[in-house]
Each structure stands twice: as C-alpha cells, then as structure tokens.
Image 1 (cartoon, rainbow, N blue to C red):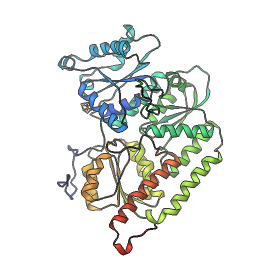
Image 2 (image 1 turned 120 degrees about the vertical axis):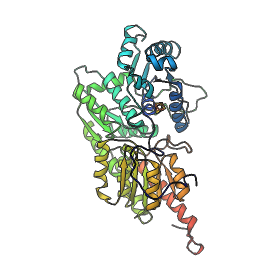
Image 3 (image 1 turned 180 degrees about the vertical axis):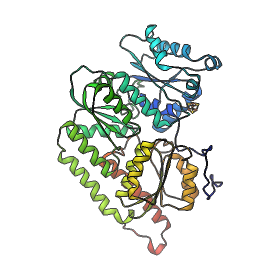
Image 4 (image 1 turned 60 degrees about the vertical axis):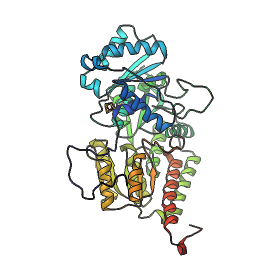
Length: 459
Ligand code: SF4
C-alpha cells in the first residue's frame, strides 16, 4: 500500500505534477548518441545530472553506459560553462579517443544561456578537435518536454550536422528510429534485409547496448550508425520516420536541407502498424514483400484469432511514451481489448492529434498528455474505473500492487526485469511476444482466482 494516499476524487491541477510519467531530456539525448558508432555522449552540466542519466540507462540496459561531463561547479554556474566544455573536449579526445563527441545541455547550462553551437565552433577554431573527428550538439533543456524530446533533438542534430549532399542520389532509404530498444533496431534491420531494402538506420543502439560478453571490455562496441552512413543520409532517395514525435523532426530536417522526401509512420508495434511499415518500406525501396514475411504475419493473425476469447473486452490502463503508446493502443483495439486510461508526460499537439485519431475506435477512453498527465492521475482513473491489466514501465508496479492488477512491463525505464533489450516488440514477431505477455498475465490471474471447481487444466 505504498500509494495508499491516492484519492479517488479527481481534481483539476495546474501547478503540481505527482509521479511524472516521463523523465528528463538529456537521458534521451544520451541514449540517441550511443546509437552513433564510436561516440562518447557528453553532458554539459553538473556531475549529478550526468550520473543520474548514466545510471538510469545502465539500470535499464544492464550495460555500462559511458558519458563524460563538463563538471560544473559554482564558478561555471555563475560565469557560464564555456571554459569547462573547451577543456573537456580537449581532454576527452586525448584520453578516451572517440570518433565523435555528442554534447547535450542540461537545465543548468540552459538557464545560464550557454550556446553549444558557438562553443563547439570555438573548439574547432581553436584546433581542439583532431582532424577527422567530430563534435555534435543538441539543446536539451529539461524544464520543458521529456526524455523523448531530448532523443528527438539529438537525432535531429545528427541529421542536421552530419548529412551532406554530393548532388547524386543514392539508392538507399533512411529509416529514422524513434525511441526503441536495441532489439527493435536489430529487428528493423532484419526486415530490411529480408525485404532486400538498402537502408541507413539511425540511430542504432544494437551491438552497443546489447553487446555480447566476450571477456574483453570494449569502450566503443562495434554497433552504431557510422559517421559515413550519417553523412550519406543527405543523398538518400527517401526517409521513413518511425514515430511522429521522436523521429519525424529529423526527417523534416533532411527534407528541408537536402530535399529528401519522407513519410512518417507509427512505430511498427502490433499488426496494423507493422503492415504499414512493411508496405511503406517495400514501396520506398522498390522491393517486393517475400513469402517469409507474409507467413510471419499469418502466424500472428492465427494466434490472435485462436486466443480472441481471452482478450475480448478486457480493460487496460497504459502509460509511457508517445510513439510506443500510439501503435500499442491501436494493437489493443485490434485484439478487441479496451484501452480505458492512457497517460504520457510527453507534451505535444502532434501526439495528441494522432492518439485521438486512434481513439476514434475507443470513445470511452480517458487520455491525457503533457503537464499533470502523471501516474497519480492514472491511479485515480483506475480507482474510478478498474481495469484488468496495466501496461507501462517499472514505476507502474506500485499501482499494480496497490490495486492488485496484472502488470506488464513495457517502455522506459524497466529497472527490475530483463528481456526488453533482447526480444523485439516491433514487427510481427514482436506482436506475437506482446500477445504472449498479455495472455500470460491475464491467464495467470484467472488461474490464481479461479474457484477449485473452475480451475482448468486446458485453456
Ligand atoms: S531535470 Fe535538469 S537538473 Fe535534473 S537531472 Fe535532468 S537535466 Fe539535471
């Protein structure tokens, strides 16, 4: 009963968020930067911010996450952090020898007004960046937006600061990954390979945050989108942005600067969103969908049809990040389940609009995002209209325990379970995994609560 003080009565709040359904911008920027090969993320702020961001990513991925910091003290906080960052760039290249440093700001450096573009230019003018190496940056003030905004800002920075145009179009498609797991990125590449589509996926944290145990510590694991690949994105013939919040801004940047046309898709979670992804990628790359992918789809459809009686009408509460929630809610509707309550701390009208389109099939649903769309509100909604299942990150376990609701961990961060880095949620096989998890949670509960005369061996 850790949340026993949560009241049932919902009151309008303006200036207060309780247990936010989001975390801070630089975590997203740091995660995105790890998806560039040979890159060391750099946090321009105090050591405390950097430690928090690193430890959250380390706990989620169970991998050592490296990042440097400008180590602000009182002096930098008053006079600005330029000297710290210039010194840091010099030291990092000398000691840790990355190919790229990806700098992101924090609340403190943003409040002071440090200009990362100007400071990184000065570092270059002063000869602090060795030939062939790069420093990129993204502004990530954490007093607005969320970790998803920070991710989007860093991915947009990659597009704006790496891409070039040689004037000759390449037969390749940019696939811009919204915030997804390394396992999901690996799966997107597998689909592209099976389709025979030539893609540049960025960012790409597979083989970085799910690297195998070799007995040897690799400071820069073999994964990540290379600088050369990122440069070539300006010459690609098309971009697919997987997520209207975390991926679309980078596609817009490439279109504006290099006239690379794009299509924004929902992240391919569940049956319908995966269908759209496969069709769009096959069209953009000019390739046919092979029989094996069609069979994979058929297996998911078969499982959904076979298990429909256990899923139909079951009520679900969800919280998390926009680009995952949108297709997940759509998938629940495809499963004939009822998404009742949905919250996300990430603001944005684009998100609101797309979610409302999906929720046209669920006019009964409560949905709120942005300020005050917090876990406290979600808990209150659940108290007023109980649900059969809760889906969200690890922080949901308190509500699940208090209200005795089956709980599936999904999203970021997951601090107390494994699997998310290794088993994809995207694609048809990801959909199969989601159905398995949902069914497992619902049927375990049915077994637990069934009276003896109704305790079934065969479902
Ligand atoms: S919210 Fe701001 S001060 Fe707090 S950890 Fe994030 S960047 Fe640092």
